[in-house]
Length: 614
Ligand code: F6R
Image (tube, rainbow, N blue to C red; front, side):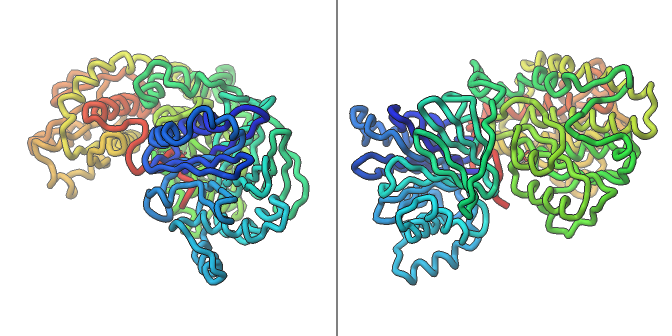
């Protein structure tokens, strides 16, 4: 949520790398953008409402190429508004000290109102409604000649979260960066240092990175990085190598990242599975869990926490853990869980699901569970992310970077990882060798199942064309396919702006059926799982109210095909794999509806990818 970039170099102009970095981070927020550049003459700030492209146009007009060379240090920001409307005044960078200090910030300063009131009493005039500007003025006030100490003193007075970068004309060539609760990574190149909210803005320059930890503050110059705690004690953080390159975050010929990521799924899922199946023991190896069979056998309950798509994957997990490992499992929306004074303890295994590994609500749920003595694991995609680190143990998805704001490959990778976890847990309990071996075989087939669905893209696009103008849709499924229905509804809401609701198939008749008419298509999940016949009955109820029904059904299932208005075929799978297969078809359906409606698919309105505010 909000993207930060900082750049400093011995000789490279900063403006190009800063704007390129913002483009990479635009998925984190895109309502306004800005840069601050420092030269011997002081600091210049350029900011604009709208996308990074608008900022680029402004720079083309106001900063001629022959002037750019003198600015080799700068900071930049792309915003997702929290405090104050997305106006130019509220766009970052914010300044203080008569324009001599500029700052960009990601996160929320919770005590900003009292800090602002105190500053206003001292005569400070504010130019914006943001919480960030408070921090800029505080640093300026504490600046008695040492930039790092000034920023440390200011940050000690701040409650809330921050990833921030600041430059000051009083300290030429120095950039101060710090983090608490919002990610910040420093890329260390040979001649350049790049700072960003995530590595995607860094890999074009270097793959050598330092992940700052909460409470770290660093002073960066082109010569190097010095990291301290806020109490000024030196801190050492290792330089790590990013294990993917720039190709992974380019569109690679696809019109949108969403489509690219949908198509990447066979390979992404093969990576999630690789090296983790043990046919000889009919189980899975998940070394990152660092749990002995004895510890796993002692678990009495599983709680899966997450938000949005990750929560839906966790809901599939409930069916998997209960069926394969006989363990009561509760999927919980992370914010509701963390504020409910949850009853968890040493017998409970809390699994935190998060693609980004930075979602504030999920992170808070992890911290609350650790406090209460539960066994906690992360199931994250982004390596080195806060949730992965704080959970201390877990399973990485290895699905590769997900850039599209709407999550696709992370969902299928999460369900695959949960399935392997349930298999491992089940085999420490009552799941037989034969059933374990059957599942190993099913998991191995997942990439091919997805490949086959992708090959049916044209048929899905054709059906999408027929329904693209609908204003409302319902998605229904039962059992393990209910969370898949929720995920299908979420995808079409966020990328195509179609009002959609996901329901348990049996629940529709308890009220929502009143809304059905020939104008409300119902998408019914009809893959082969126990209870499919009942869902077919629900389909009849919908059709009897004139609602057209789009069925996602097993290839060759003539009964299902005859029951619906339009059938989309998916390969025959075991029930455990059915949510993955169904959701891939729903992802393509949502994508095509969005494309036909002319939506901004990769960056839907009002959203941001990494939700680091509560
Ligand atoms: C939906 C979507 C969001 C995220 C949610 C959690 O397409 O992307 O609902 O799933 O914000 O994000 P992570 O998984 O990063 O914790």
